[in-house]
Length: 149
Image (cartoon, rainbow, N blue to C red; front, side, top):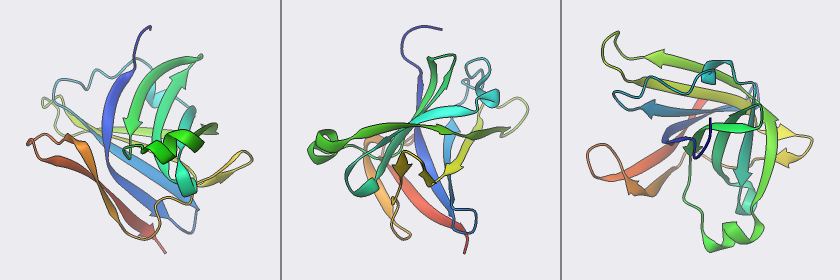
């Protein structure tokens, strides 16, 4: 595979405080359930972290090649000045909405802390507006939801 990876916007970020993990979920648009080959078997990714440990995005990779990028928050000039990238282990699951719909959801689970990174984002149960429009043309929103306490 060459070129840019398939790009999606996160719909939610789930926080499991007991397991200390985040689950980034993204809707797969109709007709795109033909995700890049092997996405479900990916076990490593790169995350971009901005100011105050804010998670900006995640990119699934295989054999050093980008397969799928999920944008979580729009970066600011302050983020770009201090942004760092970390390689992390992940678990990926893909669900289909209906057999013939061609749409579904991808969920990427990973730890909030590792040897080379620490994600404090999201802080509390908040939502962030994105500048890219959602499927209905309105600004997209990424929300944090608590999945355990």
